[in-house]
Image (cartoon, rainbow, N blue to C red; front, side, top):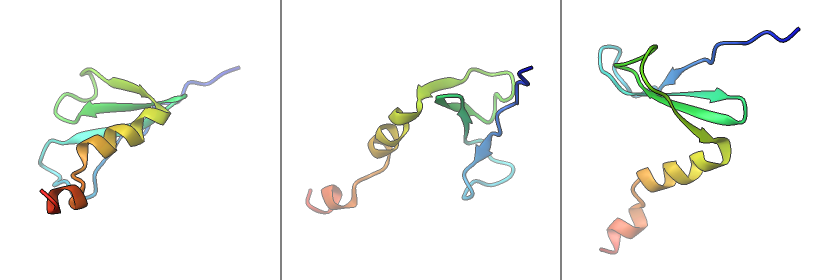
Length: 69
């Protein structure tokens, strides 16, 4: 028998309890990303797990690149 478990969605620790932000959850073979304002019924962006580091690298400013600009 297989029991489906609900994903555990997490917000960034820097977010305020009353503010909306992005939530993330580990899914089987993937990562789920959603807007906390629309959870739990809103859309979920599902990415293959190996794609998450590339996404974060793209979204995070590279201080060395900014310093040399």
